Length: 129
Ligand SMILES: Nc1nc2c([nH]c(=O)n2[C@@H]2O[C@H](COP(=O)(O)OP(=O)(O)OP(=O)(O)O)[C@@H](O)[C@H]2O)c(=O)[nH]1
Image 1 (cartoon, rainbow, N blue to C red):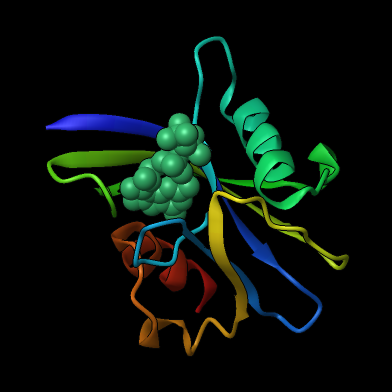
Image 2 (cartoon, protein in one colour):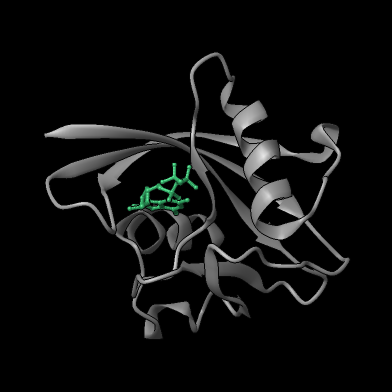
């Protein structure tokens, strides 16, 4: 079993909705974020990915760290994702990059109706209930 190390974010807006993204050519919705590159801290990786994927630059001082969670990877068979999970609120607009097929603000109580990455289904949604 191989491991994928990522940093990802629970992003909520003023309506208490959470941002879920679906990447190009994939089915499941998940948290914005991505792989931690060599030499990066998890927080640096998160800030880079949020800038790349959503063109947002949140204040690091306003970002909460929840810890590291492990789950089956959504898109890579026989891989486990090791995810550093952060949380922030974002009240401004987002501009999704080409690698994101769809981004939606979703009520956490309704999110289970979507096809979700295991990490989001089993760890993120319970954090928000
Ligand atoms: N970003 C993100 N990835 C997740 C989550 N849950 C989960 O299983 N993953 C898995 O982790 C993988 C991370 O790959 P990625 O494609 O987001 O990473 P990246 O932006 O650095 O892309 P890259 O492939 O160009 O290096 C996803 O393909 C997916 O299978 C999640 O909530 N957020």
